[in-house]
Image (cartoon, rainbow, N blue to C red):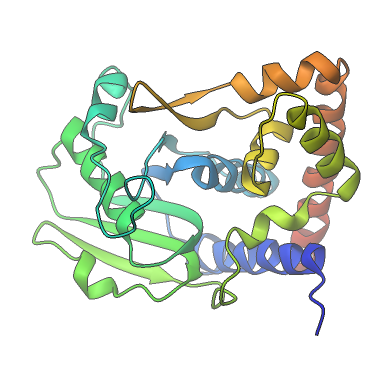
Amino acid sequence: MIMDSKQTGENSLKTFLQTLHKVSILNNKKFDLILGAGDSGQVMIAITKIFYDYFHLPFPKNIVFPVYRYKKYSKRKLFDNSSIKDDYLKKEIPAEIDSILFVDDEIENGVAAKATLDLFLSLKRLSSYFVFTIIAEDGGVDVGKLQEENYSVVYYSPKKRIEELYNAISYIIPEKYVSLIKKSLAFENISCNNMQLLCILLNLPVKELENLKPKFNYRLQNIVKKSVPNLEELQLAYQEDLTKEIRDFLKVLD
């Protein structure tokens, strides 16, 4: 059976929005902070912002760390993300935090979620017990292994991740944008995945290693602009289309 990748991406987007609606609207769950990891964290927080704006909810402070899960070429050795902390020491953080939301497109064994929370706690050690809520497609995470004494983990899965398909939500991008941006990057012998493409279209920085230190930067956007001078116009057009698609779906839930 041939999979319709765009339909798959739209399904992932809709089930994420449905789950966010269940948690924040139907269950009236409030969050003091939203956390994300890597390129997917950037994208999912941007989508969450559109959701909050639609329902006229105050959007919480948010932090996205350029987390790497594993060392290059090895899924056995975890990447040491501790150096990221230095870039976030002056980040404005709410004084009181009882509830944190972590959003991602998918979650496997929870490495990125745990690394993100550990980084945050290295910036602000919370004195009181808090709840760490995760919304991400289920890739086989054992939530029990994420629990610690000073917080509990609540996990909401929009749906099971399709086996061997990663970043499914990033396939929502129309082909006209995919081919244009990939072609412009190919001129510089650069390849990118769909989540990076989505970051570019949403004008979000992309995660890269700079001297072995994880950073967010706009290097790919600047390269694309060399051969696509109207990139900002295309970005705005896509952002408007995505916002309309999300708002149209939310009308059904509202």
